[in-house]
Structures are given as C-alpha cells and as structure tokens.
Image 1 (cartoon, rainbow, N blue to C red):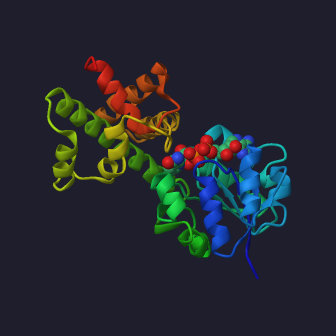
Image 2 (image 1 turned 90 degrees about the horizontal axis):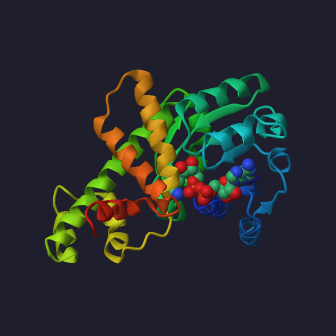
Length: 292
Ligand code: NAD
C-alpha cells in the first residue's frame, strides 16, 4: 500500500519536494496558501486539501515546509492545527528552518498526543529540492529517523541523524552561517575583480579550480555574472536564519564575530529593498558600498 503523507507548505521548496514523493509512489495530500500550487500538485497526482485539518486527518506522516517559526507554531500548535487533527502514532517531520527551541517545543507538545516529531531542515536550495539531492539534517529519536529514512531518501542524498530534538536545526544554523559568510566573501571578490578591470569569467574559472572553490561560488556564478537574482533563497529568509544563528550562539556562549557582521549585511540588504531577491544579491550591497 502507498504510504499516506500530508504536506503543508508548497512553496519554492515544498512544491518540488512533494512532487518527488509522488514520483516515489507516496500518496500525498497537500495544503498551502496559494491556490495555483494546489492545482500543480493535483496535476501531478496529489490531492489538494482546503485546510490543515483536512490534509492531516488519516495521514501516517505529516511534513511541514513553511517559512519560519511563527507559521510552523501556528500550523502545528494552533487551533485547527496538526496536533489537533493528526492521528495517534503519526510522525510529524518539520523540514522548515526554525529555531532549535521551536523544534523542542513541537516535540514536547506532540508527545502527550501520541504524535512523534523530527526536525529535519534541509540544505541544497531549489535545485536540490527539484533534483531530490538535498542534504537533510535530522534531530529526534533514532527509531523515528529510521522510520522516516525511505521518505527522506526520496528527497535528499545525504540524510544525517544529528542527535536529539533541535539538533537538526542547530546544524542547519551552522550551515546558514557558512553559506552567508561564503556568499559575502564571493561578492567582495567579484567587486574587487570588477573594479580592477579583470575578466570576471576567467577569474571565476580559476577560483573555482582551487581552494576558493565552493558550492556557493559554482551555483551562484550565473547570478554574479548576469547581476540577476531570481529566488532561489530569498534574503528575507536568510535574515530570519541569521537571527536563529545569533540567538543560538548567545544561548551557548559561542562568539561569532564574522556571523554578527554578515547578519548586519544581510539585514542592510533587506532594509535597502532586496529582501525578495536571492541571497546572492548580497553582491548588490558590496557594489553600493563600493560606489558601483
Ligand atoms: P516559500 O515562502 O516559497 O514557501 C512557503 C510556503 O508556505 C508557501 O507555499 C506558503 O503558502 C505556505 N504557508 C505559509 N503559511 C502557511 C499556513 N499558515 N498554512 C499553510 N501554508 C502556509 O519558502 P521556501 O523557500 O519554500 O522555504 C521554506 C522553508 O525552507 C523556510 O524555512 C526556508 O528557510 C527553508 N529553506 C529554503 C531553501 C530555499 O532555497 N528556498 C533552502 C533550504 C531551506
């Protein structure tokens, strides 16, 4: 029998991820706020649901892929939410990027209702979601990770159990720190090259062949060269993530001087109207500072 999955949040990431589950033979009932995303799911064999309640009642697994803490808490803990309507024994996998504290709060609230929870945020961007090659960082009970493994492997190539509830989100925070700092460094390199009159294509080729190579440099290369920044991963979401990084660091007494600086630059990009652009638009901030 096909396993039944309720998928809440069919955005840039959720939509292609849910389609990969359909392709792997899962029965997917989806709910999201944009009607055209529900039409798209239906066209690929999924079942659109008008509410969270309708989507989750009867599902063995519930996946949430929502923007941030507030939406996840509302959809899972709120009136008419997942915990109110999920059946006992269901497994809730929150794949959104939220704070480790929210991941722990979901698990605590779900336990008395007989609902098991994993935090399983992802890295790999829209391309990874489409291709099913995401990196999945899971936090929670080992048994639940084992039970979720076939489903998670339909979405990603690297699936790692990081530890107890919340640790998947802590690892994702570390990931977002590295990605933002690398983007900022690449953007600064581009402006240095540009202002020096060096051929950018040749320079990025040779940088990509040495120790400066990175997934960020290769995947954002076209954005840097064309100065176009279609999302992708929006600056607004990276701003949210840098808030999670700095709060997590404060909680454990980790000093992240570069993290603080990059968080400020992401916040500035947003304040200057670039929040809806891909995070590679950090280049625009360096250009502004450099009078370009
Ligand atoms: P998105 O804004 O494109 O999608 C969010 C979806 O959630 C939308 O379809 C929206 O309708 C839905 N939604 C919001 N509130 C809802 C509610 N109350 N009920 C039902 N649906 C609701 O965001 P995204 O880029 O897909 O990112 C989703 C999560 O994944 C975020 O936490 C983000 O940080 C993380 N993430 C994104 C990327 C990326 O490259 N875009 C990569 C890794 C992780």
